Length: 334
Image (cartoon, rainbow, N blue to C red; front, side):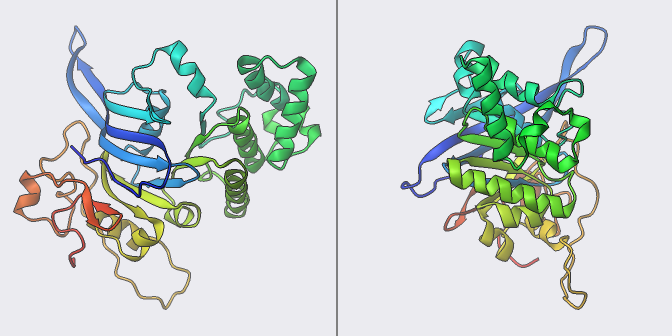
């Protein structure tokens, strides 16, 4: 089981995960009995601080989005603890969890899919206030108009339908919905991956401005390492549901310790054609999460793998100051 990450005590912890697991049962046979589990998230432990942006990166299927959905309770936790503002929330009943809805929100990858195409945007945002506040109708409408302006839209957009907006504008609507109740914590699940590069920059700038204004904390899930480098303070690297490395963004990009992180970074395109860099190519595909490898889950594709990697799972420990990695040979030359 991964050890709980320790960071400087002067920073105020907003969210803490301890040994979080999420398994999806595999059922078969006439009686649909459980025959195994897809281990989507395996013993993740971390701390997220107030006002911080923590990036979560890894290949498709590594468990990034499942981790985010499990934190919010959209997926039922299999095992572990989730604490928000020092209060454990994993075992709370539905009514007890309601107060956390205002504090924890999510921005989805596809803004169009998260909006009702038959509902005007103003009415969709109005529902947020109608469900969670006692504001009168006119006050709610004024609040929605203020929200639209906050995210760079106009008052006349209130009566438009989702199909009348561009992709970037629809994502701004998703951001408006996420900040409507003044949350402390927002999960951005590939929030800019479906947007053009120029629009990505605008949306990322908006998210940063909102963070500074409202002291928001972000869990920023992305496969784009360039975006993560620009936007995040720290980075968590996941592989096959496991955390393999975590550190400040500058350390991850300048001095990665885990061979998987090095492989990811080596795949980032560089604009200068004469810039030389050795590409680390991983052999084979990611293993089946229903039947993960013994020992280190990365050993089947790792260029540094030795016999110990096949039988002993490395602990997720502090290899250098504030730099954590799960590897028997962390930092050694490939």
